[in-house]
Length: 57
Image 1 (spheres, helix red, strand yellow):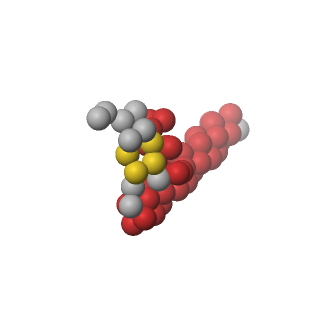
Image 2 (cartoon, rainbow, N blue to C red):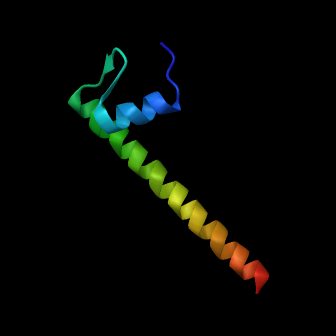
Image 3 (cartoon, rainbow, N blue to C red):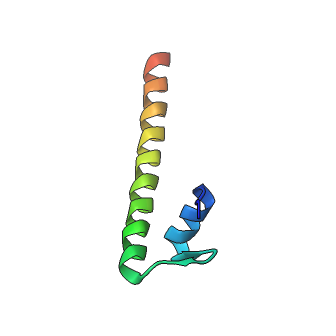
């Protein structure tokens, strides 16, 4: 089975998608990965805005 981004997000949030169900440890690990990725995206966006403000000044 091939997973797309939506499947991975659903797995991270609920622990299952389609006919795949994670055990509790895998669900915790995947959820933590999702949290780290969200943090990185937020950090990247903040840094990008900060750089844009710096260039305008």
